[in-house]
Image (cartoon, rainbow, N blue to C red; front, side):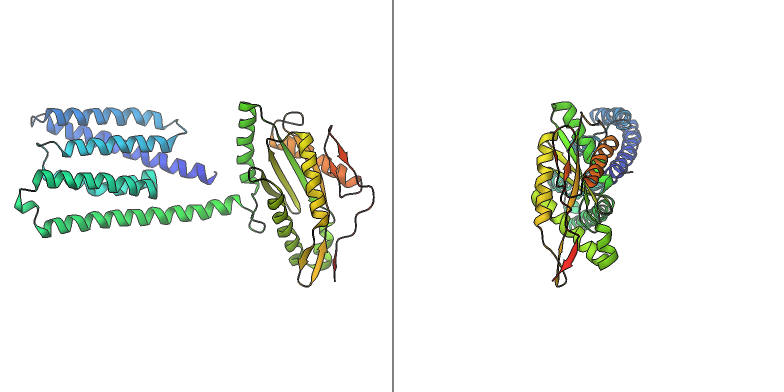
Length: 355
């Protein structure tokens, strides 16, 4: 499962648990408040239980889990503040303010959770002082100090826990979606972005293309000069791609010395021209390794979404076939289907470390 999906399912599970607790507790309090004559309070609790029960059905299927978490928290916390403002509500009910940081951080994350906690706890505290400021035994310094320290401790621990969890999750997401050597996207990230690109193309009719790039005679670099030299080449090539391409284009390491690029809003003809620019840039690039200079070339195959395929497997296969056609044409060239094929029949120089 992708890390984003895992986080969404975690939020969904927490929200479902919170909704179930809300349904049960609201109905229990309503059952207690009706006989005590607190009719308005009881009906508010019944309405909250009905809303939570309905949301339980929605949450099972929705993809907008975060949006529903926010809606639920706004309604729940607003209902809580409304109930606490009622004159018939006991001062002991204000203890519910202490769990606000816990549930807001669990459902909304550290930033939004902190914002809502500060806002609603502040309003709740103001209501307490407004209602009970004239009751000396409730506003003694030691009573208020205990309440404030408990509230700040709950808030601080909830925020610290969620921030730590988010940072750990961010590290795991990076490990799962980024190639550790080059810092480029890996196949998992490539698949996600391709789905987005395809949705955009289907919705708006915008083109996009795929480049498959393979460094010529890269194996010889590893064999003759060691894997450290090979890693230096891969990192330098990745840097060159980032410098030459746009931020909206996705560059991924497809495997070994192969790279795959998704060119946003680019048809096949323009993609061939972009590929040729990249080929020339690498041909002119001097890669430093220790006290030597390394020169390399690249062969590139081009495929366009639509004419050459509608899914990533097909497009990458077509681009790969054209890549190897470029290899058979003497390497250091671009092969781009029905648009143009830029050939360089002269044998490219052997990659070598030069003084």
